[in-house]
Image (cartoon, rainbow, N blue to C red; front, top):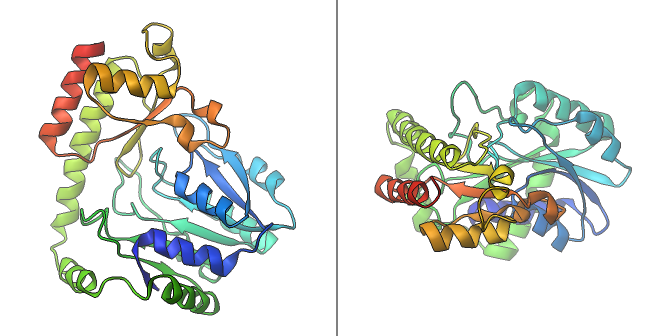
Length: 300
């Protein structure tokens, strides 16, 4: 099903799959749109906190959070805001739970072509037996640098995707036809486009991450996507203006002209994000370089 961005596909999925009072499992730090739309639908969200520098999952906690009302598990891989790339083994654990409890798994894979080091993207639907209970969401704005040009899609078992397609038609009619023709041309780009794209992002990730570490942030290096969710708790004990995430955001803008997103946006309990800021390094090199130099001058 082609839709108006991956968000449009997510909306159609929500209306096709959930009823008010259903429950869903969501992993935090999460992409706020996922949590907010679930709340809008009246779905009760059970959040599982990922921990450590690799954002590891305790599957015992996942199992304990399941109930007869649980309808689906929502996964974002590679993840926004933390850059987690779910491993094959982790996805097998998710699939085993989905099969045992007869659940759907919704996977947002918009950053699927953006992974670093030895991390590889695995689509859950590619695992044996997974397709029948997986809704795969993705899009093209991130991969082809056309953010704001809304074009995405969903893959799902036929009975469900038929409902999603009907809802998509009611909500949006269709994704803009000129964009679809334009994207058809983008599909013909040579394979080295992806190699060059990731070489560029790898360079920017290194520059941003090393700068943040140099000024006192702890950096869980992202395995994918183009964000860094950095922790400044140690910095808060040494530098005025870093008492919490909102204050830190204001301090960075005022003293270094660098914008970030407060960590409370990504956690069920805002206090859990108090010492986190999200930085995006998908910027032109000269812009990113200026931002890093400003940070080093202001706080280095």
